[in-house]
Each structure stands twice: as structure tokens, then as C-alpha cells.
Image 1: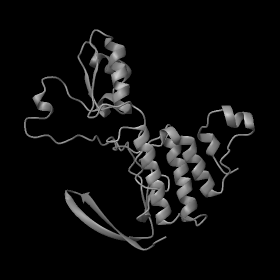
Image 2 (image 1 turned 90 degrees about the vertical axis):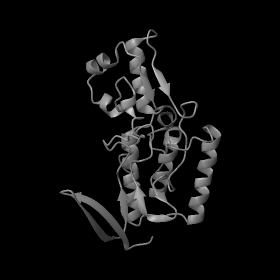
Image 3 (image 1 turned 180 degrees about the vertical axis):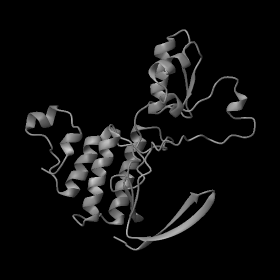
Image 4 (image 1 turned 45 degrees about the vertical axis):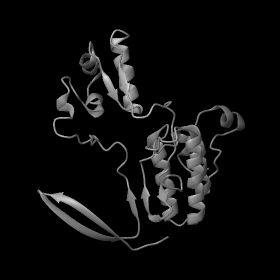
Length: 241
């Protein structure tokens, strides 16, 4: 694995932009998907939210309300939700529960599709390290059924990798694996809908691969009955068995 790379960091301190360069062996990026910074697009002058006569808020502003405040906010209003992911679906459901069929909620999306996970890994192994940039790891970006413990087990996997317990596959093998994920994505999601990274439908399989890399037994349950019928959760990956 390549070492001694150079990392350039730009910071803002007291209204001054400072550029710093660090010499490092490895970089782990942990910005995540939920950084508490709303992603708001830029609009041409006078063609953004100010052109709308109603109220425009970000989903983060809505989620910061308590249940009663949120219900009062949407009650009796015609609400349009822009977006078709988790937050959008949750808000649309809550609006429908408050207003019923009298004032149905409208969901606005770019491309009509069934709301199933699509698969576009940033890189492999396991949506964490890009084949061409093996000294950089991304933790917390890809979605799954349970984001927190998915990130935790990836951190453990990354720690084992950096500790020399196993090695990455060759670039050729990793790129071939990305091709397989892309084929799966195109088969089960809209061919033009490539904007998200998710392992939700393959969550247990994904964790099995992490366990195998680390030398752990991927069968985490005690007994065949539990392995076949009990759901997997965070405690099943608390440590090696």
C-alpha cells in the first residue's frame, strides 16, 4: 500500500483562508452523509425560493421540529416534497397523516422510479477504498439498513487492514468487482439513476465479506436455527468469533 502521501487542507480562521500541507501515510475521510450542513442548490436571481409565495424549508429544518410543531406547520397546507429518498418519504408520510386526502402531499422527483436501493459503489473494497487511490478510505458515506453499525464494522475492517492483518486485492480484481456491482445496479434500478451509494439490499452479504477479509467467521449466530431465522443486528458483529 503506498505511503507518505501529501494532504492539502484549506481552513478558514478568523476570516482568513489558510493552506496547510501534511505528509501522511493514510487518509480516512469521515464526513458522512449527515454532516448537519443542508445541501441547498443555487438558483438564478429571483428564480429560487423567493419566487414562491409559500414557505420553503429544508428537510433538516423540518426534522428539528418536535412532533406537534411539525404537525401544526403542515396542517391545512398543500405540501410539495422535493426528493425521493428517506427524509422526503418520511416527511410525505407525515404530511399525509396530518392532512389526509383533503390536501394530499405532492412528491416531486427528477426521474420516475420505484423507490428501491440502487448500487453505485464509490469504490471497492466494499465501498470504502477506490482501486486507484488505495491510501484514502471513505467511512460513513454509503447507506445501508442501519448506517451506524455499518460504519462501525467498516472502521474495524479498515483498522485490521492498516494493521496488516490482510491486504487489498489487485487493482484489476477490484475494478472487476466494481463492474459486477454496476451490472447489479442496472438490473435492479433505473439505468439513469446513479446518484446514490447504497448496500441496503445486500447488507448481510456485505458484512459477510468484511468478516471474511478480517478472518472472522461470517456465520455470527449460535446455531443453525438462529442463523436461518433470527435477524442480524449490531451485537452480532461486536467482535471476532
